[in-house]
Image 1: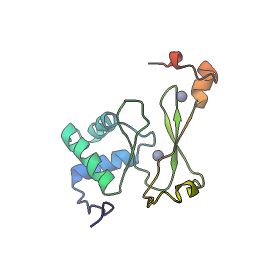
Image 2: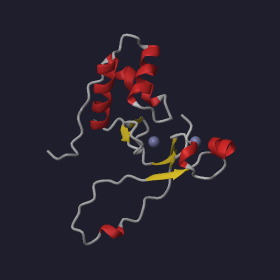
Image 3: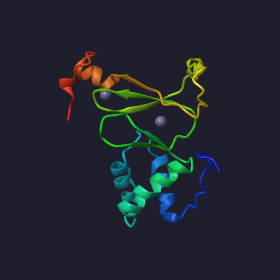
Image 4: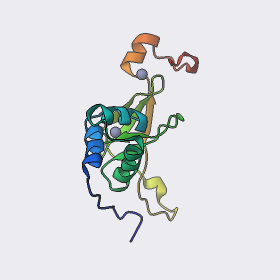
Length: 143
Ligand SMILES: [Zn+2]
Ligand SMILES: [Zn+2]
């Protein structure tokens, strides 16, 4: 067994409800945001089930965990195809981008066997540009 062995996940109706809510979401919700979406459709599914299922989905390769480093907790993504992320530094919106894989030739000589990478591109989304312009001024974060 290696660390990459994927868990064969048995999809109970509750787990399926979590997976379906995640796949219907394209905005990379936090666990709390996803919980309220699951409960709109399946009120009987509790927080512990949603949080535990998210961990299982990530470990079984059915979901991706995205950390944008804002201290707001992990975001979850039902899009498991190859893609990277664009983050708005004003409103924390996370958008999928598809682009060529990065050049990892800088790894050569380190002795590392590469198992993955994370790429976050930061910017200001069109809505925030319209409201505040393109200046990356931290003090204007909306709350
Ligand atoms: Zn924005
Ligand atoms: Zn994504």
